[in-house]
Length: 429
Image 1 (cartoon, rainbow, N blue to C red):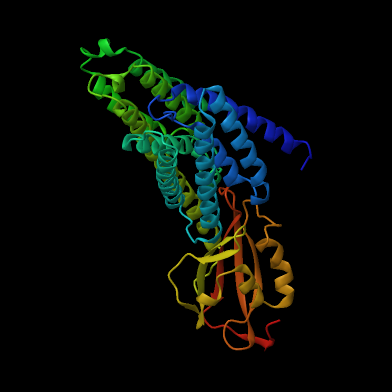
Image 2 (cartoon, rainbow, N blue to C red):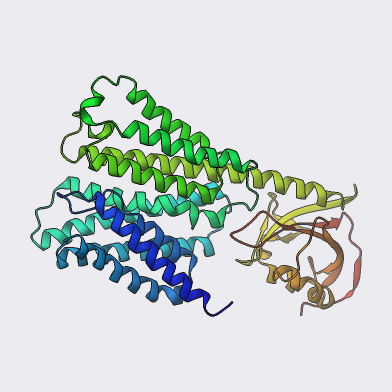
């Protein structure tokens, strides 16, 4: 990597963080001292999730300094600024660390399930952050209310989920994008914020006779969810950020439906953020589910291509190798292969350990991600020790998964004849 790219990324992060923090504190509620939405939390969480832990100190120190600087510029007292900055950093570190552990060690492969886990992490961590901030300010003698805890929690959660499609969720997405028509996607990115601006721009007194405003709010909600089927994952974050600014700013400045007489005190702010949170959660889940469907179809096509390597008198065992995590997953419900338990074949190294040394040297670059296939599967005969101590002749066919961004994946089948002739004796090396 070119050495000067990292300083440029750090500088870009600082500029973006400062700009977002400055704009978000414009939506600050005077009672709770918290912004209605805290988008810098999403930016920081995304960077922590995608950066190695060794570089976390730089990102965290930069985030803390910028957070305090922007707070002081908005007349927050120093002790209040420190409370919000430290609690924010603790919550984001915990969230990113747990997410990295789950990605590395869990056996979850479904994008939808992983996205749901990420959302759960953000919500639980945000709740913990809200409680921590609540009691920290109470210790400092600040007059806190229970509604403040809700605002702090939702503010952090909406900020994190607004950026989620651009960082953490994007890494899970298929490289295949259903956005086959960029013009349609761009049109949706213009129409939805414009419609949101129209619905949330009327002043409080203009809403009394607007009988269609509530049905239109539900229409906007459904239209946004439907649009997430056609907008690519990275562009979905742009939509989320624009919706967050429009709805938050209009509500804070007493405009739009959530500033109507039905909402008193902080209830309008809470309602607007819950509305945003629901949009972010369901849109992200729909996007992840759509990716799963496209990936499932692509994998089925690959298995169909691999199945041409199998003749009628051969037994086929399909598998999937996660090269990044070094995991070997059998995609069919089987207990053993020729009386050899598959529980002993759960990593590429375990499979390589049962191969003849010559075959092992040939297949090792494939399981390390050095070699990749194109449209045609890679196949060859292999000598395996599956039962006893003798090498048996088998056949393996593999095809690189071109639709996975998060990890390098390999789809394949192990082909074993029904009656395996034994080769001259050999032993596991």
